[in-house]
Image 1: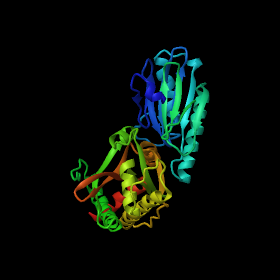
Image 2: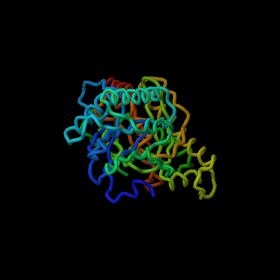
Image 3: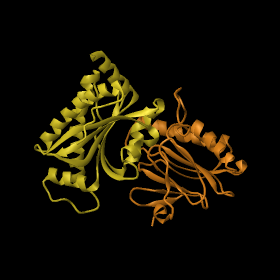
Image 4: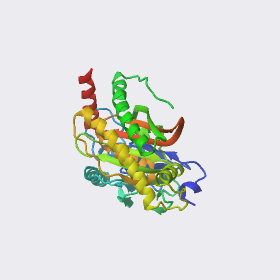
Amino acid sequence: MSPTESLTVQPKMLGFGQITIASGETSICTILGSGIGIAIYDIATQIGAVAHVVHATSTSTKKQELGRTADLAIEEMVNQLQQQGAAIGCLQAKIAGGSLMFKNENKEALITATIDEIKKQLQIAKVQVLGEDLRGTQGRKFIFNPIGCECSVEFADNTTRLI
Amino acid sequence: MTNKTHYDSPRLELLHHTFNKATEDASAAMSTWTNGQISLSLDELSEVSLESVSEDLNLGMEFFTMVVMTLDGEVGGTMILTFDEKNGRQLAATLINREVETDEVWSDLEKSALNETGNILGCAYLNALSDLVSANLVPSPPYFIQDYGASVLEQALMEQAITEDKVLICRTTFCKGTEELNWNVFFIPNSGMRTAMEKSQKASC
């Protein structure tokens, strides 16, 4: 049985470029391709924030969702966690995604830049990265369960990996 | 068959005509390839928010068989041909003139049949776009992928997502006679292609 099948409460779906807070019994699930799922959480309070980041940095002057780019998303996630009562000095993170679903050199470079920016921003925010499942050529279902702050990835061939 | 012809934006109305021409060319090629059995119809051209795009296109958590072709370069885009398992296998069986395979793993012959379908469709579609934007667009070979539809869509949308609040997507539906099939072609232009198409439409007005 996969982690999503074993959940009693249906997970809340997160779209591309979005951020949400996770607490209680509701897990967060997002489908990843080239994008990166980030879960930042406080294990003591079991409150987490999950983002589905698509790019490294924001280049547009147009209004964008803060979750689209790594440079804005991680700061926003930490702010939201602080507002929810998480202990900022104790935050931990797990990240997954960044697959190259089909061959394209430009997009491979964009994915690498996004991963690098996420790691840089997590370091700036003093968030410790405890697990990652990055790159490859397969899509992933990224699931964060606030109870125990567990993170897992499911692949389309039904294999599952805890990270 | 829904053929969405009423748009809130005059710009989308103009782009619809562009894609309609490309769809007609692709439909003619598909009809030849399938001995007149299958045709295409432009279903919808839409600008949707990145955040809700996979849900809007029903590509959320679903597993699809897909053939992907890309146009690399400043003026480019991605074409994604999607089938559910049953329909994909039925098409492959028809094309190779065999019974529908029951093995879980697709045979090389089945994959090749779908890739060739993508190639024929993609080339017809992209030739029409090449004429429109006066650029020599060279597509990649087709890639056969079985995975979450949203995962493939996300990579196709990467370039538009850098600069655009809303992403432009063209969806085409297949028909067998009057029956609508559960197959789709999505064309996702990159930002350069969006600009080139809009310029071309303005010039022709």
